[in-house]
Length: 360
Image 1 (tube, rainbow, N blue to C red):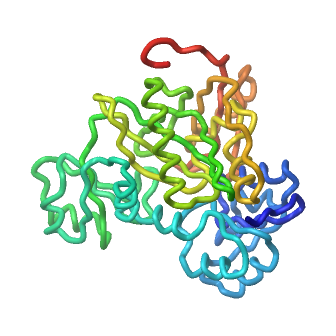
Image 2 (image 1 turned 90 degrees about the vertical axis):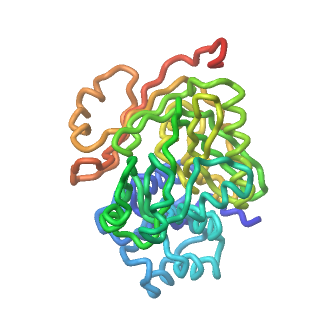
């Protein structure tokens, strides 16, 4: 186990808001962060101790980045293998390549989940219009790579024309998933340390609109048995990946109470932003602790919470949110406001309630 002492430098691939909030958490623990990303005006670069602005295929820039850090991590998954391998040959990279590889490709991800006993909706890999004719329907056709927030997806309705849909889709590979009749969408964030220790945050309920997370509620209004099962399955996935860092696992809860795994993400996750104000140690601190090889913190929640994303023009409400009693505003420092772009979020806390009956 390699432990990075406070005063060391954590290298972060990616310059988005997750990197920004990770760098803020790292600073509280006495670490510096060095961001590597292609974008000059990135939220994480603005507040980090150093930033390398270069492409992930720039070997000279990668070598300079590597020489200045003590450990490397990621705030998004889609970093090329060659960049990961170049850094990993010289220092710890947490999480490792296997976790990244698995989460980069939806087909690989679903095979992994099924192989460790996590059920998913009915799915099939699609490589041609001919494959698409056998797709579950009604369903959703998704790109295997680079899709997020509802991008790279096509609805499959009864009677769809496979040739037309495949031409519109435009990708070389896809995954077709049967639509799920679910009662809730929930997620679990699990931290796993270098010593194999695991810390689980409470199960959250998520509400999406247009493929984008809009609202997260904690505690999730599902039974204690479903919560326990979701946490057990999330921990199983983290252990199977030998992950060091954070893993977010999203589930559908069917109307019969079955848990179907949807996606995984080996990094801090939007559905965990509520932890910033409702827990003694949030997801970003846990992430830094795991990556640096420190003991994990207690993930216990002290309050109930609602997190609301500020999407596009929603951010203009910032004066009212700052004036709202109890609202905790988190803005990402983005200057370009666009429809569908996450500009910040607000957390609202309430006293931790004792739930009774089936929603306990």
